[in-house]
Amino acid sequence: MSRKPFIAGNWKMNMTAASGKKLIEELKPLVKNANCDVALCVPAILIPEMVKAAKGSNIKIGAENIHWAPSGAFTGEISAEMLKEYGVEYAIIGHSERRQYFGETDETVNKRLHAALNAGITPIVCVGETLSERENGTTNEVLDRQLSVGLAGVEDIKKIVIAYEPVWAIGTGKTATDEQAQETIAHIRKKIGELFCPNCAQKVIIQYGGSMNAKNCKGLMAQPDIDGGLIGGASLKIDFATIVNFDK
Ligand code: 13P
Image 1 (tube, rainbow, N blue to C red):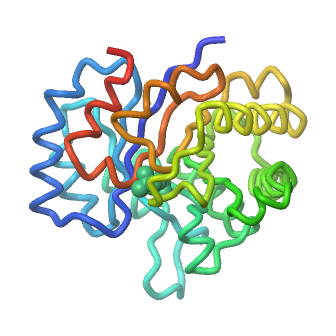
Image 2 (image 1 turned 60 degrees about the vertical axis):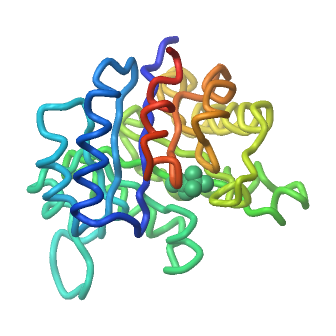
């Protein structure tokens, strides 16, 4: 079953309009012959400028979050329709930093991903266990809950991208080993098969995220169930192009 790899950056709360534009200009020629889909998820305020900067290239622009309501009294929030109007094609949903610092739950993840799908934006749904959950052997249980609640009611699971991001590997320089990432992502695919259908699960793009960089990307991408990466720190630099060209 062939799945087109997908490498996405998550700028988090980094970059400015000027530095973001400069990086995109530098990346464009370096990633133009990529054999994978390429996206950069950027802070909301940078979206219009980054969409302009990436225009005509194979770099798509994504958001880092999305609100579930179409409009209303939600001070500080941004709707799917607003993002779509500016050319956003992807949205990260339920990143562990949003779960940890902003009270995101599996239920709000589910509401947000439906808002994204309704607007024609591809959700990149983040799941992953903490260090203590891995150490006490509950990784699969945690993932099963995040997937069954988070993905409830999805009609076409192929429209969702999953990012497996072990919380202990994010920004720590401590990557999951190729084998750990493969084993856990294979479990995620199996669970999606049970929740939806085994055949559809084979078509779902599942990324790895957590200290993925220009050095370790090849080994991770060689794993049969790993279809891409969600890149934090290394997406703020020209190294992102090396990751996008992991197969060259
Ligand atoms: P780092 O690549 O900086 O570890 O971040 C991963 C991540 O959280 C991407 O969403």
